[in-house]
Length: 343
Image (tube, rainbow, N blue to C red; front, side, top):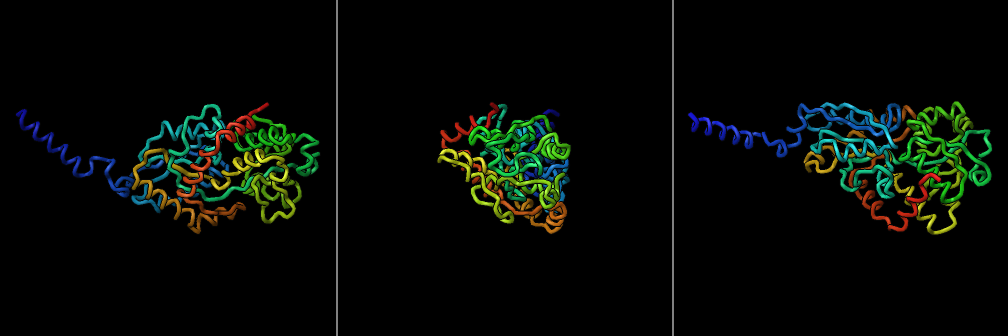
């Protein structure tokens, strides 16, 4: 009897190995069929990150082999650090969890911001649906109406947490260039900052141009209610003649190098990724589905409805950009770390 049981158990184990019981060896289509993929979003609902994550996953469920369903979990906190830590340290590494995180996560890791517990180079980057040009802007009628005014007058700007781009940018420009940006923290998201601007609790913000044009302040630039002061990339923005770039106010090579590092994540846009160690065939399937989702006419139409635009950045490109950011010379990284702290 005991011998019969041993033979039966051995046969069952063999059948599991040969017949697909070993989940790690399953083909991607077989693995994803019937699964539920959780999308961790590092920003609050109704943000651009949230919008893009939901639009992309709505297409990916139809394009990914096996057609898994997608559910969404917003996990804002510390400017995106909370969600990114979760994706690195807690989330399953089998392809059933993906994330959309703040584009400056490589920077916060490079500059060793508090509570960062991830290595950006070990994530598998899926890609981004946009390139995010960043600007600083002020309400019409306040003392600051052009970039030069920031050296004479204080501008109250809203922040969305210690790791958020609005907060980091404000500290950086104040400490590095001497601009008088007075940061007001306490807002949970960038849309909350724009609502505060509508109430005139704060008078300005530094954020992505696409989000500024498509959020609560949509139409304010065209209507003359909001003034763009400068953009944060080395090259001037097309479509805004006469708008200076922040690089025009840098006086030393070190300042230019730090500003270049700060602007290097513009190509990251709204980045999606997986945790480390996802099997290669599942990662390839996810990346392919991501590209097809971003290129889908339905997604592009929805983005255009809110005044946005779609520019595909592939996962391979993002992987290289992240590696380059993390290879920044130590002296520049250390100086940047000092410049983005509150004083």
